[in-house]
Image 1 (cartoon, rainbow over the protein chains, first blue to last red):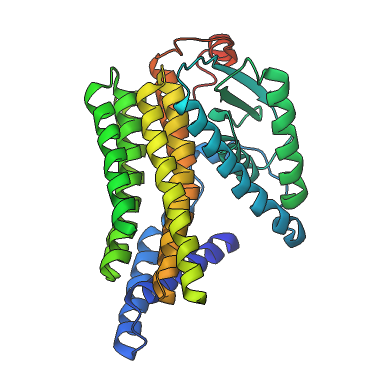
Image 2 (cartoon, each protein chain N blue to C red):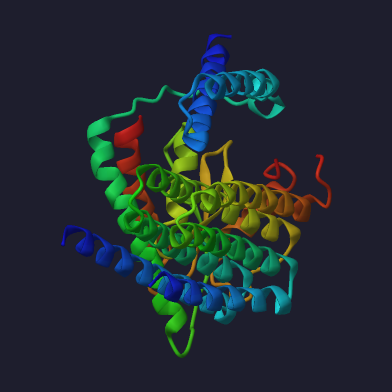
Length: 173
Length: 85
Length: 119
């Protein structure tokens, strides 16, 4: 019960911060209206944070430790990966003859936490040449669509994802 | 300078719209519509900078949230043939 | 002088971002099947929109407007992979196969497990 209480308080604070950012009136009536609205919305929607049927048979996940020192190197690399992916797709689209060899590769990860797995899937989508098609939460498998398996065959996709996974695990677990 | 960027985005959105028209299957059209919403949000942000009017940014944020929900709903409907599973 | 350099950097960001957006739209027209179009429509467009928004945030002086534009950019960064993943999965489970396929582990997995994998 305690985590749900914490989550609803967090939701309340985030909603109120958004209200302040959007109205940008630091007078008493506006702030009171914002507080009232955030309270009402939190009361209405906090039920959606209770566990659903999907999460009942999921096993216990290990706790997360967010390390700030790893995050400093993590996020610039993330942005750099996005820019590289963008440049790669742009070059591919501008080529006169497009010869692609796409395919879907199955990857086994060793990450057991759901949040970390979702972050890894998002990061795979934004790295050059790969796109996550599905996550198998029960067996911790990822299915990755690769745009060009001729230059980037299955083993190199696996190696690349392994690298990302190690970095993410050093930061989060 | 911003006008030039807006012209470029207009050409990009026209190309995306062409994919919406000719797309052979439904997901093609969904992908192209998703791309169009992203381009339109960027256009709204650039218009806010150009006119010096912050109200466009609120519209842009609300529009991007609605577009995200739309794409998820369309994908789910396309996958199962119904919304409630 | 300082302002001038900042706006020049902002304009460079915007031009490169708009160029990426245009190439991504071009790729969406030219690529052969749905999955590769998702590649074009997600990655290149995320990078392009991100760079354009960062340029716009650098261009505009007011602090609050900068915060809002960066909020939109962050929102794109989080939601765009999710929507592309939803489309790709819906498309595969609906039965649209990749036209030129070299390797397809996902289909094998779906055939082996049958109903089980489909949560």
